[in-house]
Image (cartoon, rainbow, N blue to C red; front, side, top):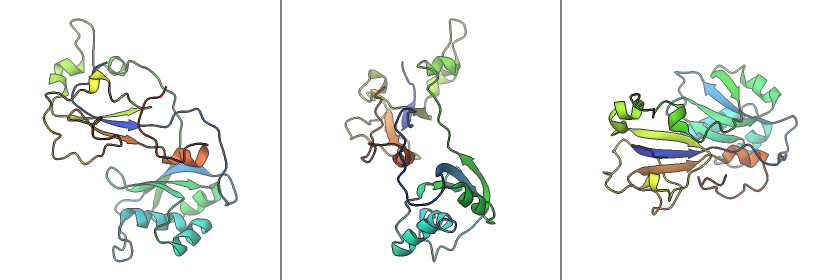
Length: 219
């Protein structure tokens, strides 16, 4: 399967693993995406980064997180991810009671529980209508094969050595690209310009994921 354009592969968590409990707080913990009301400013004299501010919001309703933050301002174990580009928000581990108290804060907009999705197809371009039969060439052929665009793929992982990711003849990535490559430099190139693993939330739930996970397709 070929991928025109430049690619940024994002590894998502698979749905098969063993659940464990690894925390000291009371109540059932779940992962939530919390959206912060916009516009909402924070004191940059107190919080040097958006992540440290988001950690303080989590600590405002989580006793254990507050103790960790007081002992070490860099501690943010209940904070999984901090978002600042497309949305202002964060992913965090919360109990129902903590989520209820968070909902009473003036900065809180809404919270979305984590969902697990099953892989739907191995023929994504066809499913999305990017390719088509004769006389119905699909979006790729009608739009110059996506030339100049950065394409983000959400997947269970990739095989970086596959010929589809060969960067021969491709110009360097555009200056607007701010992503990163979790592979070594021999895998990422002028076509596969980035690859990143998002396994942090799985570390709370599943065994054997203490080490960094590369965005490799192992299924």
